[in-house]
Amino acid sequence: MLPNLTTFGIGARNPSDIAYMFDQGLFDDIRIYNYGLSPLNVASLYTEFITDESVCLNGVYPQFDLNGDCVFDIEDFAEIAATWLECNLVPDCIEPQLP
Image 1 (cartoon, helix red, strand yellow):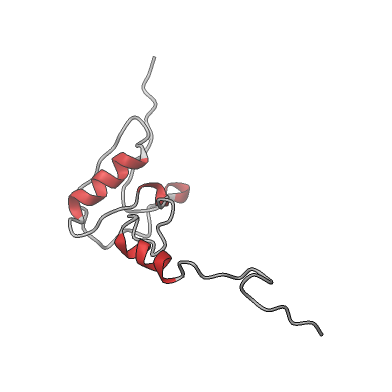
Image 2 (cartoon, rainbow, N blue to C red):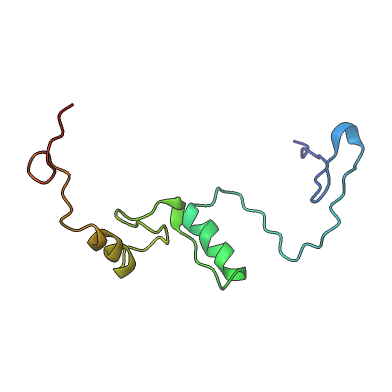
């Protein structure tokens, strides 16, 4: 059985066997996997290089994370506490206004 030989390029498009639109940047890390990466794998690879950032896995924020920082903490609790015991019940808290 003969191997399937095809052209493989990184950083350019190759329609009709004519390479064009070459990338003008530099590549310092290229990895090829023979399997799909999990969201945790991708986040781990990203934070290897971007060390001053954290990644919220899958973009799924914890319940009650009101400020969108991927952590339910005192800041979120403060937002909840700011409206603690507010009441919008009619007639218990708000006088009905009839037309």
